[in-house]
Image 1 (tube, rainbow, N blue to C red):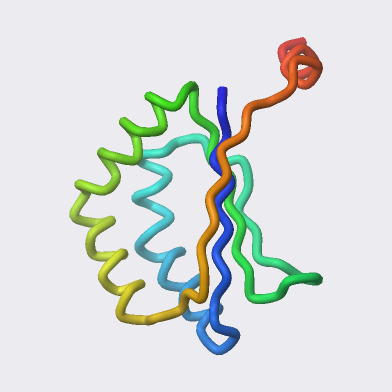
Image 2: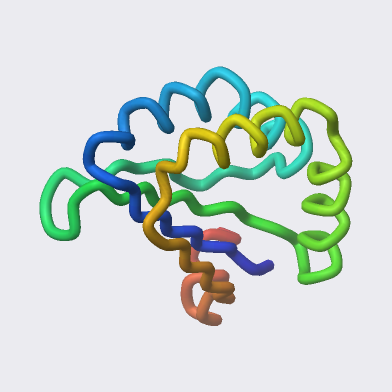
Length: 109
């Protein structure tokens, strides 16, 4: 198992508009293709105007296949075009992580 931790920093004036756009167009497509969302957050303190979401995959190959299918989806292409036109992003960061052995043992029962 791996997790993809995605962090987006938005312009303060555009965060709410981007979240609304994502909720309407992006979220349904990502749920359909990526499946296992383990968290979707907007910061309340600290580095503001930040969106963090975490997706779980069986492997890197699983991630690549799921994301590849999503990128081909016309619904995702519509969302991406509208997101780009909105111009909400300042930066994006991705991290891939794997769980520790003691965590896996704990969640496996």
